[in-house]
Each structure stands twice: as C-alpha cells, then as structure tokens.
Image (tube, rainbow, N blue to C red; front, top):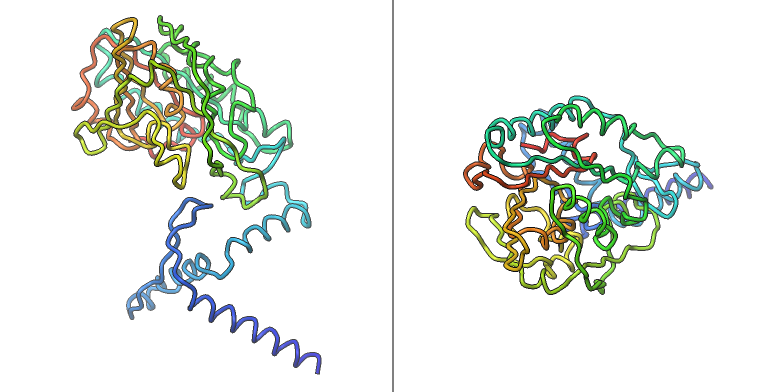
Length: 364
C-alpha cells in the first residue's frame, strides 16, 4: 500500500511539473543570470535523427522549468550549507563579497591580447608622437580568493608577465591604491566614488592633472550585480553612487555605435533602471565614444583602449583633457580603428582588467 501511494504521489508530481512546464508563459530572458533563455526547438525529422532536437529540448526544459529561480536558490543554499561546498558553479561568497573564481592563468589568452595590442601599436602608433601607457586592473580575487582558501592566479606574476609582453608602453601601477571595498560586493566592477585617486594617479603619470571636487549622488534603485544572479546565493544588493560637478555637466559625449556621431549622456539614467544599472556609466558597451570638455585647462587629448572598467573611470579623467576617445576592440575590429581616429600627439592608455586579458578571445 505504501509503495502504491509513493508511486501515485511521484506520478502526480511529475505529471504536474510537466503540465506546468508546457502551460507556463515562455520566459525569454533571465534577469538574474543576464542571458537569454532557450526557446522551444522546432521539430523536424532531420533534427531528431541528428540528435540536435533532443539536445535543444533538454536546454529548453532546463531553462523553462517551473519555479526555476526558486530551485536555483535552493540548490545553491543546499550545496553551501548542507554539502559544505565552498563555491557554486565557480562563484563564492567571502568577506561580504560575491566573486567568481579566476583560475588558472591562460597563456594563450594573454598572448592573444598582447598580439592585439602590438598590432595596434605597429599599425597606428609606432611612428607617431603619441605617448603610450599601460595600466592593468586586478579583479577583486586579488584581495579575496587566496586569503579565503580559493584557487587564484598569481596576479603579481600575471601583471609582470604582461608588462614584459608590452614593453613598448610605460606602465602605470594602480594596484597599491586598490583595496577590496573599492569593488561592488555583488559585481565584478569597481565603484566610481572609490577611484578618484586612481584617476588622479593615471593623469599625473601622463603629465596632467585630473583632481577635481565632486558631488556624490546615490541612485535610488538597488544594484543586483552580475555575481548575485549567477550565484543564486543570498546577499544584499549594492548601491550605485556617481560623481558630478560643473565640468562634467558641460561636457559633450558623442557615441558612434552606428558609425555616425549621436550625442548622449555621461550618465544614462534609462540604463540605470534597466537590467544592468552599471551600464549607466557612459551607456555601457560602446565600440567608440568621445568626451569633449570645452573647459579643459589644456588642449591635450587622450585615447583609451578599454573594457567596461573604464566606463566609470573615464568621466573622472575628463577634467584633465579637452577630448577623451574610448575604443573597445571587443566591438570594433582593430583593423578598422584607423578609419575613425587620426593618431598624432595624443596620450594613449591601454586600460584593461586582468579578467579580460585572461579571457581575451573577445578582443578583435
């Protein structure tokens, strides 16, 4: 009798879940994971024979499972507190921060990044009067991983090795100015209100002065960083603060996402309330943009080859330069850069996180 009840109960549960999976509205996007979810695959004889249909159907059912977010959180909590696992799919919690394990160092990736930078140097910069600088941003595992028992690359060796690959540039060391709480607790990026000293050091090392007084503004919207959704662990969201002053308010920002200049905002308040509020800084990912400062003390220009960390830093360099151009070769081919920029006597800064350099196939 007990076995019959158990079989009937399990049958009802499985049938109910299957029915719920088919009847529930299709979810196209996971805001917590920041990725599109699999859609129902189209049935065809060829896709069944090749096995493609079943593979796609498995992805679909996993992504569209009823109460998926609740089960993700339950799995993460069970793994951590019942099984004693230190991480969940490579994500972990320590010292009030969430982070993703970055290990091991990948020589192929760093070589690829170095080759892209050298291509840009040889193609556009070698025979010009530009002044070349390099600065690397360690991800927060530099401060968090090893002290808490997690695998970690040797960041000091990583940075030293990459400096040697790009010895045609002057290196600016910002690591001594950084600490763990300069980064968001639930995200990979650094906090703008904490990096004024970084901007000042970079500007000073490039022969100019970016020191300025700012008003600190707080976004009235919680920031659920990328690690919070991916880990499914429980943590309080961050708060985004952003800096303003009269100089920044009078700057013009031109975006070239379509190849033609379109004026936009330094801080995009629409994106501040969208899926990734960090994209409020210079509107997030953009292949090419310019910050024009009509009140610059000098006529100097700066070109930054960059990743997303520069989105919140570049506004703090704006007081020092008449024009700052940001180039992201994840979204524009290196071979096309010369179509948009005339390299002459500018300061040129390659500013990249160790995460991008260690996973550099996106650099084009």
